Picture (cartoon, protein in one colour):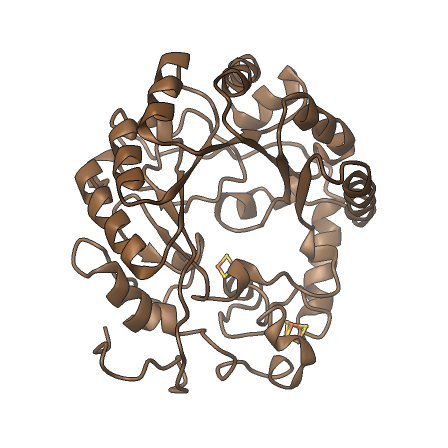
Amino acid sequence: MKDQQHQPRDLDGNPVTPGLPMAMLAEVTHRCPLACPYCSNPVELTRAAQELTADDWGRVFRQAADLGVLQVHVSGGEPGARRDLAQIVTHARDARLYVNLITSGIGITRERLEELDRAGVDHVQLSLQGIRPDMADRISGHPGSWDKKMAFAAWVQEIGFPLTINAVVHRQNLERLPEMIALAEQLGARRIEVATVQFHGWADLNRKALMPTREQAAFARQVVNDARIRLRGRMVIDYVPADHHAVYPKACMGGWGSTGLNVAPDGTVLPCHAAQSIPWMRFENVRDTPLGEIWHGSDSFNAFRGTGWMPEPCQSCARKTVDFGGCRCQAMALAGDARATDPVCSLSPFHAQVVARAEDDARADTADLVYRRMRKGE
Ligand code: SF4
Ligand code: FES
């Protein structure tokens, strides 16, 4: 940890100027009744005994609000697996944060949802694994999940929460994207996030079963463009494209350490959900260090701030302040170097290799899934 009085510097020693975070992802637990094979949680999951208490979260929320955070996404795992979820939400509300509950809808009864409403949840984000029971239950690894989700969605409507549907798409369900958008409309959603699987962690173990084809990526782009026109003024569509088939990478996290931060169940503070896949990076914990110090002064948050650290071709590229060189974790996974240009970029020296592997995975004749699970005894 660098002294906060000192000028923060990136990993090459270039001075950087941290901005203010607007949103915080609070992963209150890694426990989850579902077993989605593309889960964004790390492959090494945190056990219940290591989780922050509700009062710890209260302290973190107050520090986040002091730092400038306006919105907290209460997520997991499944946040409903925490019996003290209403207490956690009350703490977030007391810190004057806007509270978005990100949930699978499994394990939260109508009574609990009403309790969460009273505690201060402002908005609900519900994940969808498919548009029919067979697909939803198979992808989530949880028989009966579809019926429970649909009941939960009805309660959300009845109580009157604003709703976002989170539809994760991949080779096994992309053809059904128009129906997913229609279902979100039917459920009264104001927004749908269509997010193509990002191949980190668990999803990386399932590349051969989930990698979309180039044709599917083009189809999804067209469906989203058409739906945006049709639904203008009624429902917002956010779209995370299949970047293995794109020309330029996404601006992951809107730029490292620029507007958001994640707090893991054990209090580890991360610049993004997959940052622990960068093996040499060390992360601070809110149990030991205040959030503001971590945001402004930690080596992990400062490592890739600004543009000074970027290698070529990013350093002399006009898009370096648009996509920030892409995703650091994807660079780690695909190029073996977190500092490298994101290899999904067509200007990366690794691009041809990455595309060839993606095309190969997309052609694989398998639908078999490796499900997310805790290790025995956890
Ligand atoms: Fe983005 Fe770097 Fe590719 Fe330019 S070279 S488009 S900055 S990833
Ligand atoms: Fe870590 Fe993109 S997921 S920077």
